[in-house]
Amino acid sequence: MAAPGAQRVLFTEAVRQALLSWPVLQIAVDNGFGGVYGTQKADWMVDVVQQFFHDNADLQRCEVEDFVADIMNQEFNTVVEDGSLPQLCDSLLQMFSQWQQGALQTLRNTIDSLSQKKSERAKVTAPPPQSDEEEEDEEAQVMECESCGPSVSRTADPPEEEDGWTMVKKKK
Image 1 (cartoon, rainbow, N blue to C red):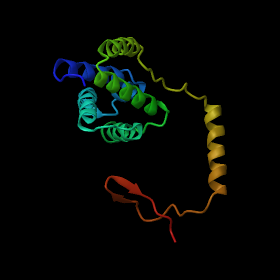
Image 2 (cartoon, helix red, strand yellow):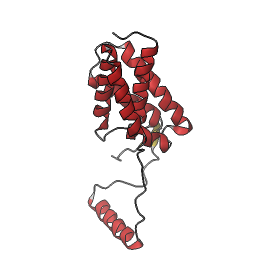
Image 3 (cartoon, rainbow, N blue to C red):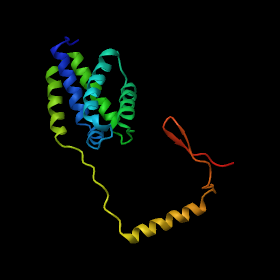
Image 4 (cartoon, helix red, strand yellow):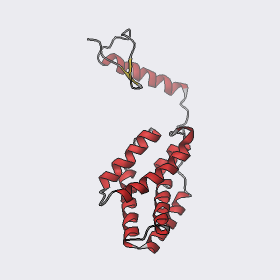
């Protein structure tokens, strides 16, 4: 097993590079999904993820996925459904294994490749504006769909608020 101290810092740097080069986290931070402290939350996430590995023996991918998914959901209001979470977790597990086995040069090489990947930031662009004609067609389709659906009274009681969620109930 790798000695604590300076070598533990190497694993922390590996986690940092893996998370900060992950497009989902990049997009969440860049677009303010974590609020005004999104960058600090991303740094905090690095610390808690590396601590999670040190505090738990023989982690499975599903456990790491659940942990990272919970953080993304709670701290960045983001549900990861793009298929990248299992890849990220496999990478984290592989780097931790390298660190445990003392394959520090291999881990450094992985960190270098991730830092190059990090420079390729994910970009989100808004869809092009629709013309008035397209909007009218879309509105007509929506109106047609609403007339086909089940009848719901629009004059129902105001929605109830529970824990920040708006509850809409069907009238009986």
